[in-house]
Picture: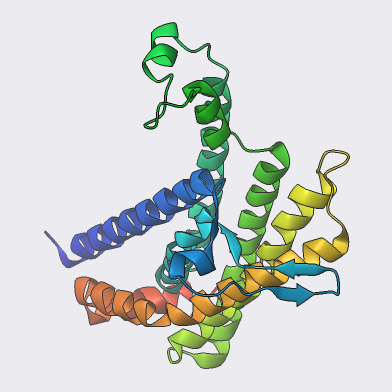
Length: 269
């Protein structure tokens, strides 16, 4: 095998692996996002009881999707580093399409008539209480249209903003300070993401009678972004680990070539 063919194969293999990690975690994060968990109770710490904007006392009650989104953030930055704007944009639009497909598939399956024997076999829980497994299935997998639209719009805009800020910071830092462009771009994009999904899902497209006030959107957004800010800082060492592994796989020459090529385009779209 020639050197050129070997390099091309490594580039393709790496992009497939990174895309698989990105796509899998993004879709799973969307599907499990319907569960809201208490971060304080999970960690065994006192609840935050943050009083925000005068009227709201909030704890860190978060979507379960935040457990996996940091992996998506890291993968975005790695794809950005080695494949540039086009690489991130390609996998982002592809992922958004598959997320939309997943929600269409879920909508179809939750409307299928349940088999009687399935309901009978699962008619009681472990304690002998009446249990409707079809209702439980639908409650777990269904999400409101506002949440679906909000998460997809926030995801795409966040990804485009992330790659734009990342490339602008790379122009300033050069090949140094990976942590600055990776963490900086994530913090900016997640600030927009945190508020956009809440605004669309719970204010703009919320059914009458359930619409949040702008103050509530801002207050909940502060809590969500605080968590994302802390996690973005905490996972920075993993970025260096990933770079080390990838550079060992690609080889120094190919790695530098890909990074240099990826840094050329800094436009937003």
